[in-house]
Amino acid sequence: MNHRIRTIAIFLALALALPALMQASGTIPAGTKIPVVLDQTVSSKTAKAGQTVSGTVAQDVTVGGKVVIPKGSAAKLIVSSAQASGRLSTPAKLYLRLHTVTVGGKTYTFATSSAGRTLGGKGKRDAEFIGGGAAGGAIIGALAGGGKGAAIGAAAGAGAGTAGAAATGKKDIEFPAETRLTFTTRAVVTIN
Image 1 (spheres, rainbow, N blue to C red):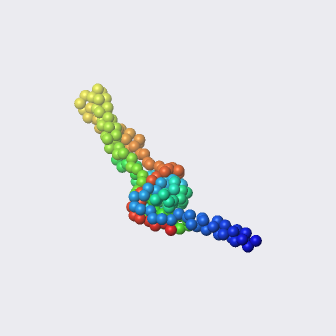
Image 2: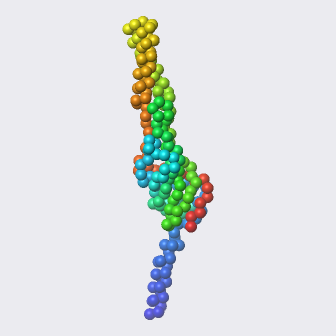
Image 3: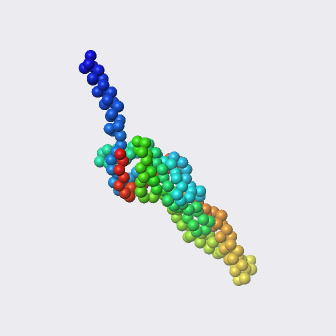
């Protein structure tokens, strides 16, 4: 009987201790990639530098074959740079960086690269809009009123082209919830 009780006690002790022994721990070296899925939408139109965004670690982060950050760990990101699209020449940009990850009830702070994007400049496209409007206006003006009409038409066409470029040029960046971003650590972090 004592043998049976002792066996059960050892089994229960192991069953209770095993999860604690298997809990994530280790040192994450600089250069480690941490994939995160956003839990909320963030947009260059409304985001401000320093704003926090919630996310979730998208897959186990392993070091030396050992899981140090389990998939599903809560993550907090910081907007490192945001700029809404301007009408004529300012492209939208939106960048985030991983700030903290919570593992086993403890929160760890990270220094990471930024992840995000900048939309391409619209300068060439806007110049084509404005130049095309000026050329079109000059042709119509020349047909209607000769040299003086060409000058007036060119000015009117350039104005119309500028208005067209301004009206169609605003494009902001939006990362909807479930967007996956990958961050690279810049410093060592010890998880224990």
